[in-house]
Amino acid sequence: MRGSSRLRRLAPPPRAVDWAILVAVASAVATGLLAWTGWLPPALLVDLHGIVGLTLAGLLVFKFARVAKRVLDRRAWDRATPISILLGVVAVAALVSGAFWGLGGNVPIGPWTTLNAHVGLGLLAIPILLVHLRARLRLPSRTDASRRSALRLGGLLVAGTIAWRLSEAVAALGGTIRDTGSKPTGELYDTETEGGSFPVTSWVADDPDPIDRSDWSLTVAGLDSEGSELGYDELLAAAGDERRATLDCTSGWYTVQNWQGIRVGDLLDQAGVDAEAADARWVRFVSVTGYRWSLPIAEAREALLSTAIDGSPLGHGHGGPARLVAPGRRGFQWVKWVERVELRRDPDPAQWAVTLVSGFD
Ligand SMILES: Nc1nc2c(c(=O)[nH]1)N[C@H]1C(S)=C(S)[C@@H](COP(=O)(O)O)O[C@H]1N2
Ligand SMILES: [Mo]
Image (cartoon, rainbow, N blue to C red; front, side, top):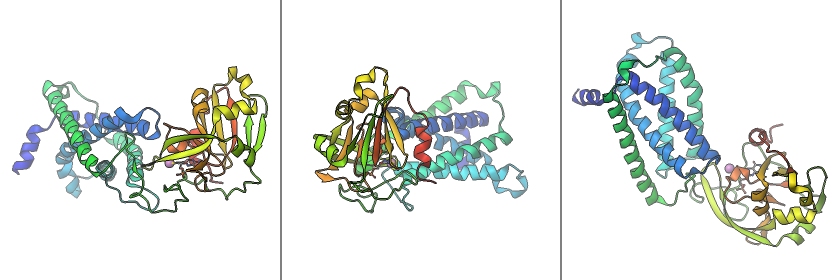
């Protein structure tokens, strides 16, 4: 076939392709996770993720062209071949779902957006890749590191970058995608919204019963003191602040709302716990469900403990009686149904795990 011989002429040496794939996958996973969780500012990471992903697609074309004969001929299989095929399928599905989302597409499956599917497939590929490598890993040799293979791999990277720029232009036609990869909500979901016209989302299984405001109270605790307790009416009386802030969920939607409530710095001062705060570096927000997140104290003081959106009391789904509004943070950090705000000396690494398992008894 003419096409395939032309492809072969452009191909970097096999092992250079394989090692470039490994580097590309590692970079895609790292940039993807860091951007998606909001660990680092996403702007540059999302670009890198897209470029690496599209370059990886090019590398896979060479790889599949090379191994096609061996895969199609059942007699050439060995024990590791099924895993290799599975890896190929999952990798392609991860790339296609990522590209589809990046171009503005979405086909929700139950509560999961195509972005969720993309992340899930990408993570699923990791253990399969490790099994594949156990059977197939070959160390690179001198001959793989030629000038020619460097030029060809570099060419692929340039093509990946151009493709990414083009895809961004196409995506921009469809509407605004934030640096986080999120789209305005509306087209994405058709769910119960409980006012505020955006979806109610809980991370995995957190789903408490509606909270009776006359039963509820908020504890504001110091480092070594229990601080004070506020009832709902006391909190409302103290709440005179507002933030216009973007709630940006890792499912891939965002919404800009006017949130009313109390500035957390004022809450701490009023409770009298901030006096001893020389040692306090963090503020932790704890939900009635145990779900929690901590912010550095300077950032926490500027955040809002919100009781209302656009003047209407927060509905149960959106975290009423009170939820954290943390501008610039990802949605999963905006703790809903807050019942405790406490000063801490140390960060709280276990919070990452808690957000995943909270609500499973
Ligand atoms: N207690 C608690 N708070 C939570 C969650 C949760 O599952 N439990 N989900 C988080 C996630 S992932 C998002 S995106 C926002 C969603 O807020 P909303 O339901 O008001 O849209 O709340 C966050 N706060
Ligand atoms: Mo979320």
